[in-house]
Length: 174
Image (tube, rainbow, N blue to C red):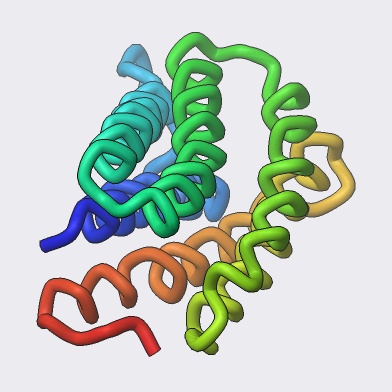
């Protein structure tokens, strides 16, 4: 399994949990109990750290022509998930995370040519654009959390977990 599969799985699970939290599923603490968003934060932080470590593995093991661009795009998401995880664990203001989501949404579109030949990876860049802009809109109260939750759960399934399953089964991402 290539390192990108690990990235897809851990990121997909973190996005899934964040999506469910925004949908309100398992998001409210029980009386005198711990806050479930702290757990979501720890999983998200773990995903970010794993993504960043895998980016280093990619740089160390892949040919520079593919390794450097791939590690670069992974670093966008690793940094975002790490920052979001810390914010959730510590109960911090999410507006700076919304600000961070804007370049994470837009700049990866510059990798379009890198993903030439893959309609699915091109479509994933577009879905990520929508998802990360939705994060920004939600943190500023412009989009309901439940809408973001729906976007994130679908994003998790389509852009992270489906490619992971394809790669794990020995297939290419179309």
